[in-house]
Length: 86
Image (cartoon, rainbow, N blue to C red; front, side, top):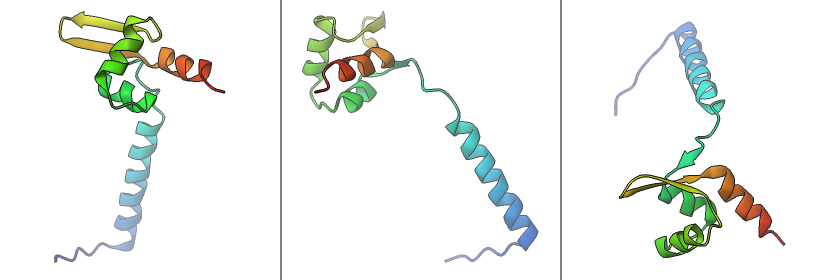
């Protein structure tokens, strides 16, 4: 195990830099388009065929920039979840 010693001022400067970097990343708006893995996580499903079913039935919006790559609209997934809330 290695022990790293810092002066008090250097320690607090390091902490301030870490907090600043974390807060700058935290304030970024979420991406509009997400991949299938993230879409399945949001919908709490594990089956790609269920995701495809939602896509085919027009329940969630998607974009297919090329044949093998599909992106899903985060907002349409949130709307789908809200619509099916009981």
